Image (tube, rainbow, N blue to C red; front, side, top):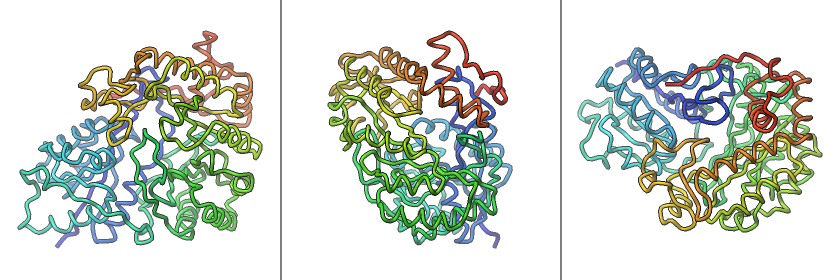
Length: 488
């Protein structure tokens, strides 16, 4: 009997961005590999299936083009991963696969399916929904549905749902990185521009409980040796030179992180660079020095707000003094400090939003992302917005209208004091004021002189200059290709 064939896929998500690019996106842009699909592929392949990855993001494929590629491979199953912003595009891709070949069983997982499994299972074009860790449920579907006695599609939506238990990561094989050409996955290194980049993960889950995040509270770890071996494989066999450590918070277990860093240094990967996500209250000078010695060039932290009241309301668990100290320590170590901010928390006022804008400039910070709050299903802030407690959807129907959920540039909420338009105006002003600071411009200018020519990387800086000064940054025309694609 032939091995079952499983296609794993994600849709083009760049079509969902509305910031900086005017509804288009750059052909040459930062793309991270679909780590979750690689992990699934590694496990299911070990169980005997033939697996291929179809990534609509690489070539900005329409759902129709992606479905045609999948159908042409003639798989028995196709598994998609989706977040809330791209769930409707993913459902459409499932429908088109079914239209092309009704015998292909469609499987949908990811955070949106985990939070709203019955909603996803209600679509006729979806045969199976996986909740939580997907490796073993996916292998079960592939194994059991090869038996003719079991139908692929079932009438009762709830019967389509399979629940994955929390996997011990040490039981999983290395993700199937061999299925990708890493020349297709490039991300901007500070001084080298866009370079072959891999997502790697040493742990799943986050022990913290921020109100705006749908989290997996129990943290499960790979061994330090497994993680380091994956990095070495990607470096030596796949030509990867930049590693995006994908953990929600890489530094949760300090002693473990120090052990990983020591083992990475022993590999002598002299031209490999790394970045990770951390928390302001978990950093110290010794840990940052070890990160720097291991060629970590960026550390990102979620600061979220410059208002102590907003930080307390969102259950962030960090204070403004934590954030000040963290940014200063990161920068003094020679690592780029990056931070994220949100405007539009429940009960946000103009004064608290202004405090965030001012705080972002006060910090020893060189890169910042500003977003308007999007209350994703499965989060506490989603429930707050539904109850209209200091935050509400602009239209009540937006609470279930997934097409309006976008990563950036399309506010769908308002507070008691601020309209959605005012929230977006404050976000734009935050970007403008932050990126037109002299210290920030001089830093980016030094990166350009050092060899970073990624036009995609400099978009926030150029956006700010256009807004404030009515012109491009001086070296904009000297950056790489300006080819733009209009997603459909």
